[in-house]
Image (cartoon, rainbow, N blue to C red; front, side, top):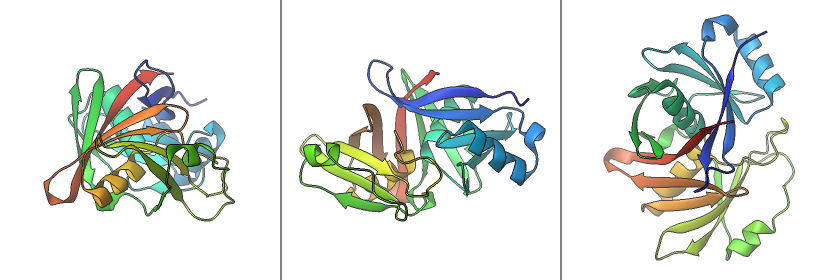
Length: 213
């Protein structure tokens, strides 16, 4: 039996919603890639993090079907849980900070896995979308208030691994922020909230609330 903790990342203003994340603090207890994949698949979260060095913040991120070199909500959740000033992912070093109720990470936008950013004319259209068939990883979005930088979004990973819709996705939010080149407040899924800011050198800061699940 492997011990793990569960947090919800990018919670709404009242602490509701958020994307659940499994965190195995003792990564050495699940050392083999095949075992990490099997555990991530068994837990069934969008992502599961294995902590390989808690002092230096070295983490390994898995979905139920693949390893990810970098992902947003696992980094925000791990930063909050571990209290690390930096994290090391397979893509590179991620800066972290805490600011009141928000936990923030800063990383290169091109570390985010490819996503199809699909704009719609209204938030109502995004709300009405059906889950598309497996294949393309789609981030559907529309302006709620363009002057205020407020976005309505939903995420459809399309991997066919049981995660039909992702409640809150930091990496996709980073890509959208890089494409629009402006700070955003994104309401995703049922009511999760992601806040982003573009930084010099192609970096994006992503923040949100984290709660134990």
